[in-house]
Image (cartoon, helix red, strand yellow):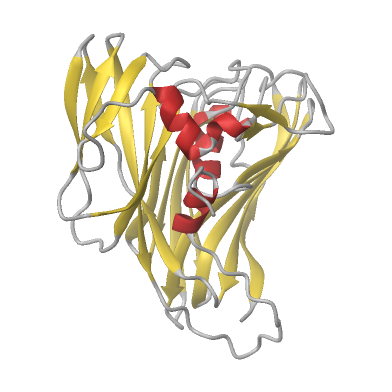
Length: 320
């Protein structure tokens, strides 16, 4: 029952810039074994106020492919270095488990950790990881930095996690039905759905998950259930403090809907009442049980049991 960390990739070029939006493609080989998450570590040395709040505000998209199969495909509804609040990317990761997006608060030096859930048993032969990462432009110059990816092997992992491609919907000022498409050929259940607006504003008066409620619930009610209103949104803001994280009761324009492992017998149907004409994306998180293989070299005696479903539930008011 062992946890071990392996650095599989490092460079000094996959970093943001104030010259504008950038997209990077990369790949790395990794050894076989049970990988419960990949850890993306980014550092920068930059001019003051390059990113006003947390680093996730410039994360436009991140797509990760393991041995030809996409298991993480996230696109932010908006990305802006001047957004002085919690980012949609950081909020989404932390909705799948506290501490999945954390940062050392700093003005001219950034250091951020994004823990991407995976839960795959990689074969004993050499495996291949590929990724596409897009940044929005920073608001001031970035002189240098590093980009690293670590694989965390954990023989006590219990679930696979798949963040599938989002469904985009162009809303009018009315109540409309949204069908969130689920991928074919991927077994499991739906732990939750991330709802994102294209600006830092909710512009929603109510959402009904048709399979789970006869009534539309307003965003504040969902935030009461998913843990946001416990000051559950954590982010870095160096203008406030370089020694502590900041707490909020919402991510503006972002809302995580816990679905308590809803079955995948059909696509997820929502009715959404929008107060503005806008475009939203709906990103499902799919989980499935897995039995991880034991590693022969492990001597660790404390199991670190990981489960995206349990982490989503832990943040809600449904805990014991």
